[in-house]
Image 1 (spheres, rainbow, N blue to C red):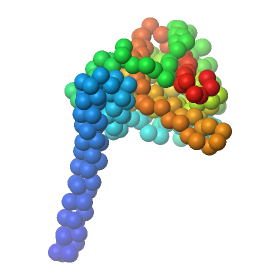
Image 2 (image 1 turned 135 degrees about the vertical axis):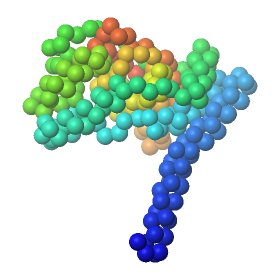
Image 3 (image 1 turned 180 degrees about the vertical axis):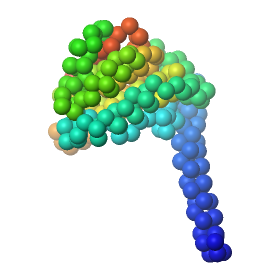
Image 4 (image 1 turned 60 degrees about the vertical axis):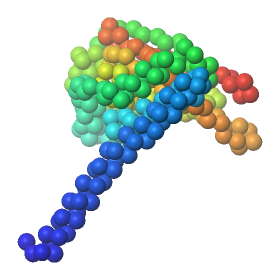
Length: 257
């Protein structure tokens, strides 16, 4: 290897190392800044703003712990079963492989829980329903939620059912769009769900305790956009159920419900 090639290799290695450090450290520093702001706001009795700051910090901190690329039912319709099977298997693996939440993320959840009784909420999670479905009913719901029947490998469905992966369906309304993040309080993993008007997406969750972070958006007739602060509620997914559903509601004085 000549000197020029060696120098190029060294430069590339340094560049990759810097990039890795940047993408690992930048979210942590941003989260630390938001967490500090949250503590100051909480100590000042500004609990709504403190919750939004803590929630923003938790979203930043868990950016590297979310799964990207699971195909939805529309995408799966255009894939052959083997092509679709790989990402869904990877998602089920990711969901069930154990990790531990970091002390920093756990402290943010604690801060959110302190604020929850003192906040005047604009976004609500309500009408939570849950049941234990039989294997055949679980498979039927899976096919409706995630993929056309022809593209649903039964082995993946059976595996998810055996591991008690809960199919969670979340509904919005005709006025608001929602960005929702579920942070697993045990592992620190994050599942993001985007709900546009009148959508009811479904996704998989492990049983456990979750911090559910919600942000809503509305567009007024005069083209002005309203965006809520980030709000959080705690949600427990029992290990005795296989199917859950909930609805989102937003109540703001000057916006129609």
